[in-house]
Length: 132
Image (cartoon, rainbow, N blue to C red; front, top):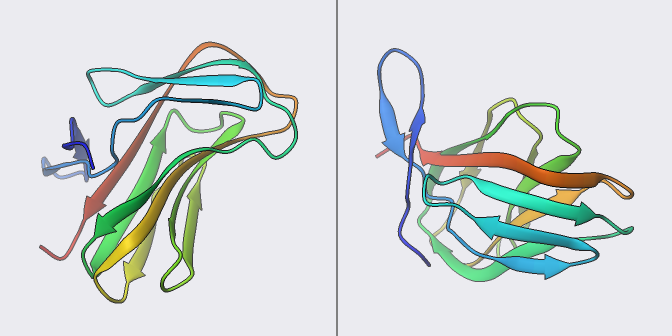
């Protein structure tokens, strides 16, 4: 997995490095490009069932928080651990979840809404571990 690249704010002045990896993908009419600041740029029009993802990633057991900025875009970001069948989607608001055991079967996914059109649309997923 690529090194984390940006800090995610948890409020109260605390910032933790995001664990969401950088990756590029092109599927279902949409191109996903990682940016140096931890954000991603989306371009194109999504067909039904489009998934832009990287898989086979490691994640330690623990409590995590996933948030996406800006809120309300027609795309969800998902952390999916197929080992424990843990799936967490966020379209903005932070969601807390637990990975029960160390795993090497995590995928990070962008799930654009069918028919959504993106023109240099920037989205920033932030994944942080809360129980370090």
